[in-house]
Length: 424
Ligand code: IMP
Image (cartoon, rainbow, N blue to C red; front, side, top):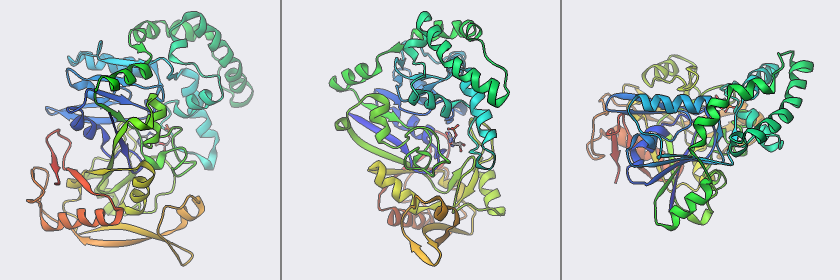
């Protein structure tokens, strides 16, 4: 059966570490959406790996990894990642499978992503510039190129010409960018087509066969609930569905096969790029969180905006994802803060709001209602059991549980594999 791991905030919750920790008990790790905008960091034996497309389960010698149809694949980023892993002695061939029907990110997607965001002016989103939104736009606009078409020379050339007709018109007439020649892209990508071909299969059939055989699948979501195109802080979102429902579409698995949904929540909140963020801390405390938590984007290196834990948001994430349990990450970062705040609701024009509002006007202008707990001084990064944790740490954890209405099953207290505490 299938377990899904989802982010409950704006991404960067520490899903890479959690997937790496959980992967040991699964046979297959399958990524279901997003693209090379993601940056999942894993530390094993003091070595740091950052994954953008390949599930971090690849670090285990015997696990199978799948990049599902819901993912948008940049062949350049993928090959770079494969080569990096090989250089570090990690076997990739025979362990990695890529969906035939995933869509491919090509040079014009990356150029357009940057140009379009610039042209948005005041409405700029601050995308990662990896061509994610533009690849998904082509998918829905029915001029996308799927992996199966990309690796077939004739079909690729035919589709590339059709796509470039439109893109070059935009480049020439509107954005005043250089136009792109299909022949040039075709030749440049020859090597990528050859290298990627060996990994390509019908992953929907493969995964369903494995489920029938009784294999255990871990479905890996990228980004987080509030970057979801439907449920996030639109338009400041990514162009896919990171929520658990996205796993069915992005892998070709029936909802009947999903057994468990695990939410990952950071002990505070961060967001990269533009968009409303009510619990953001704009003073020294925010700066301190960024520094201690090393809150810089794993993909773009941009400083992440930091703020207090927003229980109203995570509670909503628990509902739309159907979360069974939470893994709380980076709790060690909060050591040394005198008081710790938790957002428990919002106030807008004198009215109290106890849920996450879809109105960007309300969400951008509301005041947060906070509850406060006492901080702690002890370094908790090497604690092994919940019982041993300082009283104030437990109070904070229990306050979060009370506010979000879901139990915290595990607590991560550092980036290494072993730094995780089972709560029960
Ligand atoms: P895009 O996904 O590159 O289109 O970017 C859209 C928004 O999502 C921007 O605000 C990005 O900073 C944000 N975003 C995309 N991927 C991630 C991620 O993996 N972690 C955190 N934020 C992300």
